[in-house]
Length: 393
Ligand SMILES: *Cc1c(COP(=O)(O)O)cnc(C)c1O
Image 1 (tube, rainbow, N blue to C red):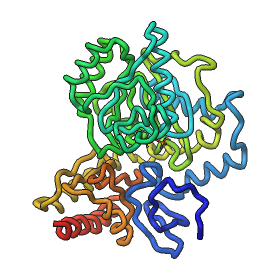
Image 2 (spheres, rainbow, N blue to C red):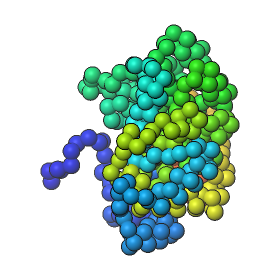
Image 3 (cartoon, rainbow, N blue to C red):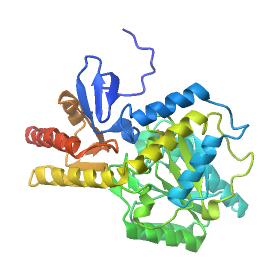
Image 4 (cartoon, protein in one colour):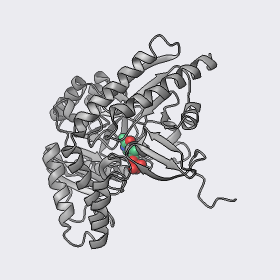
């Protein structure tokens, strides 16, 4: 059969029909353990009863109005996100790249307000910020950019985690208005910004009066065991972006501002037709409510530690394993060789995982993942990686 879907993805030959919790079922009724959550999206797993009910009720009331009017659900969500994060105001959109577009536009506006005509933003090596023109330009992966030149200008790249390089570019480039960073690099291969580094970046941003923008599209909303990744370091960014896990599968993104970023966007600065509509906001409000009531932050920490410990133990001394790392339910296993094949092998074994940056096995299970789920994951994945490395050697 000829597919009329544009050919932009390498897809696995499986389609899913329904799910329940951390389980997802294919067309033949086979159950898989979902340790990927649609790439950090399905925070509450599949078909969470409270989310199902909340969405059904909202769909029966009102799906969409417009940002031409007040949207009480959006006001409540902004209030809730600010209370949880310490940020001051939120703009809503529909995806991660849009949230980052908003952050980039905000930073440029901030620069222009200060008389900088060609504002530049410091971004990191291995960063991933999205696939729109501005966000792919900010992304530190040539594969994402190739063929789409000319890129958007106004980005300066430094190595992730290296303070000296950042300090130097801030000294020499007077056009810099912001530093944009993932607290945990996701697509880049699960690399953590250390708390010391984050605090030092915050200090540098303050000294130079720059915006600190944290892209928490993948690591935010409880995934690392705190509501937001920056909270591990006790810093507060000026801008934070969210998306993936925020709506537990209903598309929603957010760009939050505080400090010197607060009030930069004014009526007419930015907009979105769908952004923050009642359905999406109810999805996010329910996601946050369940994370809180079901203690899913503590669960992410506990189960994430169990997964990392189990992997470290099961793979200790295995040739070809470079490192097991992560924070909460954001876990990476870096191998010495490319390991894309592991994804299909895991699928055959009834497990959904991902490989990123060529050689990093990435796990992003739903926050409802139980210790029993973790043990099942380990019992499948550890032998799979061992066999893969034994055969490849
Ligand atoms: C996935 C991701 C994005 C892009 O999100 P989309 O919803 O795909 O546009 C941006 N930043 C980070 C850190 C991401 O992981």
